[in-house]
Length: 108
Image (cartoon, rainbow, N blue to C red; front, side, top):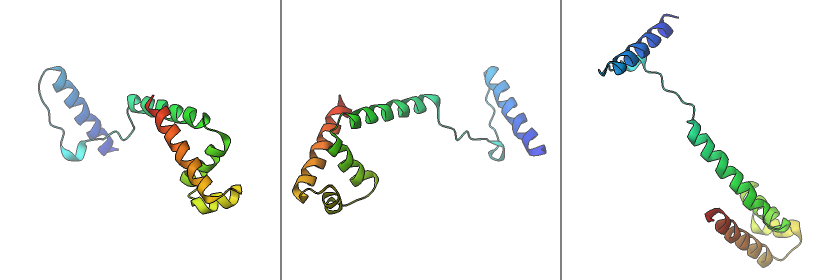
C-alpha cells in the first residue's frame, strides 16, 4: 500500500511541476508505464481488420477456403488440393490469384 501511495505521489508531483512549467524527473522505481494500447492505435487496428474481412469476403468461396487453409490453418498446397479434390496446379493458381486480389483490395 505504501508503494502505491509513493507512485501516486510521484505522479502528482510530476503533474504539478509540469503545470507550473517546471520539470520533475520521476525516479525509476516510481514510474508506471501504461501497457494499454492508445485509442488511436486500437481504432486503426479495428479499421484494418474490417477492411481485411471485407476484402476476404470479396473472394470466391474456393479462394477463401484455400487462403484460410494455407495461411490460417497452415496446410500445404498438396494437402489443400487433396482436400478440395483439385489438381495441385489449380490450388496454386487459386491461392496466387486470391493473394493478388487481396493486395489490390487492401491497397485501394
